[in-house]
Image: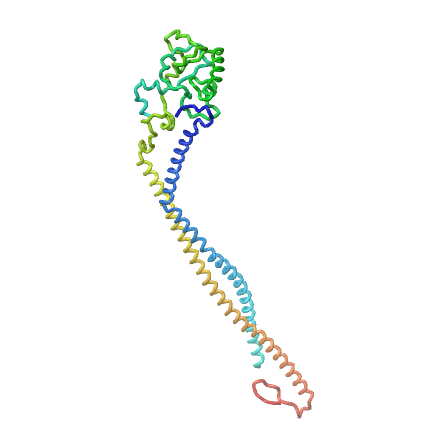
Length: 105
Length: 259
């Protein structure tokens, strides 16, 4: 095992290094599977994903709410105008009463 | 590791890496006892995990093999013998094969005291490489790390971490669900109020339109009034123009009298 091959000095420790790398790889895989188990075991991913999806589903609702609110703002302006005209018309009724009284002379 | 600390000390002689002192010290003293430990001819200086660029003594094994090198049989031997004869002495690691041409005999140890550096090297505790399987001993395979590792703290730690993640995620999901429900509720409320507003606006429009008719009515009444007063005045004036015998009675609105 420890014999030096005179053919190439560069391949001297190749096998040892490969074995070491394999061991390291096995350890890394174990750690990674442990981490994945921790993450999957607590169903945090699914829960949060579901919450995010539901929130995304409410987006059209929010858009319609915004549009309704804008329309209601316009409607309020219209109602203001109508209120003005109704007030003026109500004042006219008094004048009409006077005229009718005058006609009934 | 504890296993090799408790090994018998006589095995330590095999484990310590052999040292080549070709360039350092003039005389060596300890090498006589170690001559029989290494039997084979070609030996690299220990299984050390060094990089390729730092592999020591490779040139030694290639250019100056101690025993029989498969490649350089006669040529390397000739020039190696020459260089060795001319350079300083080296500590002999293996019994040199007897050659009639060049025999270098090293002077014996002058004092029994070991050299300072060699003594310090001997004081280095024995250590094993990372992967014990590379040593070549049939008994010492790579011990699995799980043998010496107690899994219970790890299991506890990971289960607690898992529970912590779950405990964080559940209230968050509940809050988000509540928010979503509130959004839906708000949207329904707003749409209801919007419908009410539309209804009110329509009825307002009807009333306003009806009341606008009042304006026309009042205008017409005013015109009626003015025309009537004008007509009455004209009739009165005409009445005055007539002679006394033909005058009409003064016009009274309530009584329906035709002129």
